[in-house]
Length: 229
Picture 1 (cartoon, rainbow, N blue to C red):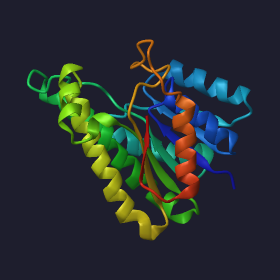
Picture 2 (picture 1 turned 90 degrees about the vertical axis):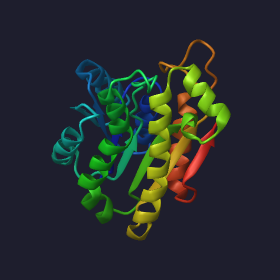
Picture 3 (picture 1 turned 45 degrees about the vertical axis):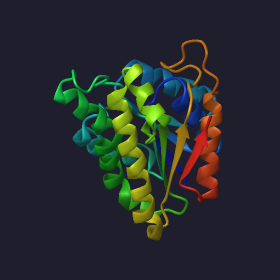
């Protein structure tokens, strides 16, 4: 039976590289994002590489919408073997000036909706060998004075809070699901990635490096967090 990976937060950069890497390794790809045109283009590009893919439009800040799309993925591609979560938003850059809804949104994308995907997919993950939850995170989530100063300077305070929460969630899920044979791992990216909105022409990290690290984590099923600089 073919394996399926749900790519949450599909777009240029890391998630494209992840879809291509796992597709090349025999996975079917479920692409999830809000932008319908972007999803359609992604499916077409993957199919050109002989990778089976399907698009599932959803707002990844809406946990109910995320839970509702899982049965659609299952119907189209079969049981989900891997959840990959690249989704993030940089709302609430200044937490003192931001609306409460902005901070709630950035936290929802990072944690609440990811949990909705995990809970709804759990029967699939428990029933399959080599199932996994793979998360892409950023170094702004670390507890460090210099990192916090950068988050304030860059107007990414909400993202820093969300990344910290997501980092903790990864560790909690790793401990919680280990006895079920479900691997939970995180690639912590400590720099700008080429081809992403953070790339101002000086990015040094190739998105394929991140995808390769996620594949390595998935196959090794050992450490929970790996840093990429």
